[in-house]
Image (cartoon, rainbow, N blue to C red; front, side, top):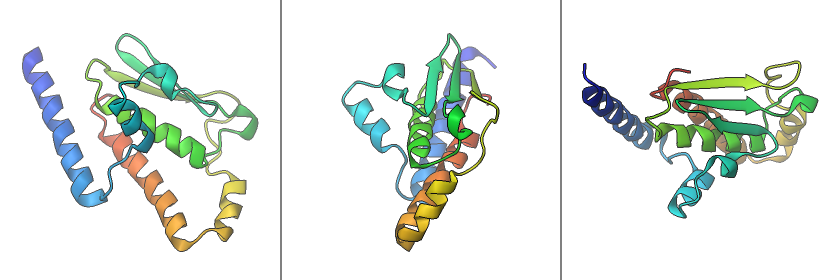
Length: 148
């Protein structure tokens, strides 16, 4: 298969993934991602924040969980950061490999217990929205055209 054919196949897979996302998952991911992209500001430094570092190499990208003090637990801030990084990676055919790693003793200690306790004060719709966001992130992570 030629390079051109591979790029076309990757582009076609990406388009199919977006169609599946729109049909099955409903609302597409990427609130902050979409706003940055529309404003023309999507850059690596825009996606770095306290809980996730998103670094680009020549043909690779690294997502690094950066909450070592909290054992890299997942909360709403982490979900938003992961969502934005994964949505950005979908549109980067030059990236061939995505490495996911973390700082600290644990890769991830799961959902933050404080966040889970705060769910008792949330409505069913808010809880469902957060869990759906996590499900969408996992779906899009496994659907990335890059090797992860």
